[in-house]
Picture 1 (cartoon, rainbow, N blue to C red):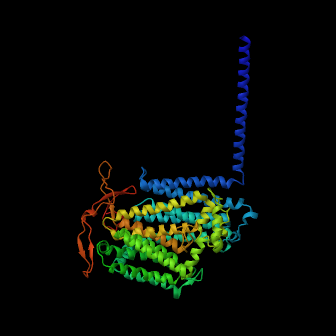
Picture 2: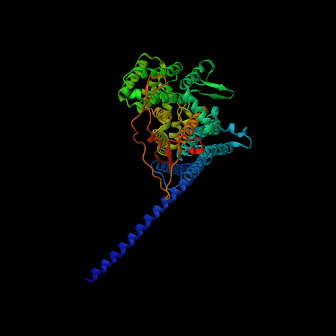
Picture 3: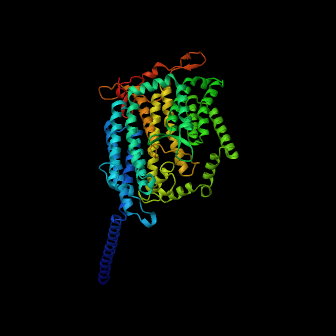
Length: 583
């Protein structure tokens, strides 16, 4: 027994020794592999990918914080939240622009990706700026100045929401980042990022003009009194391109040239037309809901067809598709007539089928065939799909993809560039920001629906214009829908589009400020709020001046409701025009 015990002790000691040796070896191997990984990541070749992962993660966190703020107001005061978020977004944009972009261009393989064209940046005409890095810094500072103007004007005249402005700035920063990155690889558009930053600043100034009560009320009062004159102005803006327009692409005269600037009238025309439709639907709401007469439907159809005919003659089918979908949405939201919606979709499907079958207009046939078989009919879509496939989950890092090979990448296919260089995570973050904008816009429209149905319908319309346009262009880039000649709102290159979209943001905030005043807060700091929307009283019947239509009036109870909007307490129904909507 003694020998057996000694033998067991000897084996156990040896076993413990070998186990310790094995564990030590495994630990040393793990440390060695971690060291190799760190050395590999920190090497000059992989530095862009490490920085890309860090910046991408921070961007995702910021968007999650924004979405959480939309769902539920947090403990942070709205003013502090908005200010901090704008600053954090601008600093993150600076890291992407001034650090990530130069790293990508410095590290990429010139034999595989080609060499960037830095010639336009060697001797810039911009004072105090020399070289590509100075150009990037100047773009970043100009975007900061534009953001500061937007924030200051909003605080002065329409401080009713702390979410929309950060979302819009995030989208604009993403667009400028991609456009600046494309510049060195596309000599013809080398300064397109600078132009977009300049228009961002111009749009911020236009935002201040539109949101100010003096201008806003004059414009809204004129539109209220003369909606059909607004319709004629809309048609004239588009139709005038036949006589005074200029062609930039495809041989179609879709732009006006004013000196060095080109303006695309369809951008402002879409918003004006949505307002006319909103005014018409609000006036004829009772007729659509109860009456069986076709006069109102015929009037609406003639009004829409008058604009669509001009766009059809221009072969500009993208805006027609957007406006048709938006008008149908607005019609159903006002009338609730799903039967008419089904009939409208059936008629639209029949028209598209006939246009495809008879190849008139030919653009419909070509767009559908590009969608059905891009490998055979569309080299542009083929390039785009291959470029998207190179992005994978995290993207290639800015400056390291072949996105610049895709034709019209700066406008129609800019989402492809985002997918390639920021990956599916970056593209998903961008889409979440778009959807957050749409959700917030719908929340604001619900706030107005109580006693200001026309303004609520108009706001819903402009939100849907931007949402439908975003869905169509993203689905077109992914070859899920036939691509239309549209731009991604706030992101694609286009000065007139960016300025008009910032004007739309001003209108959205201005309409809410127009009808709000601070609600009463109790001594304990609580606000007695009730959820929206709330059922209205039974409508009182009023008549048109010509006694031809019966319209609903709104009960007085709709003017006395309180709610918390974006962390601020407001009472709906005030028609004040004082700064910030204060009574």
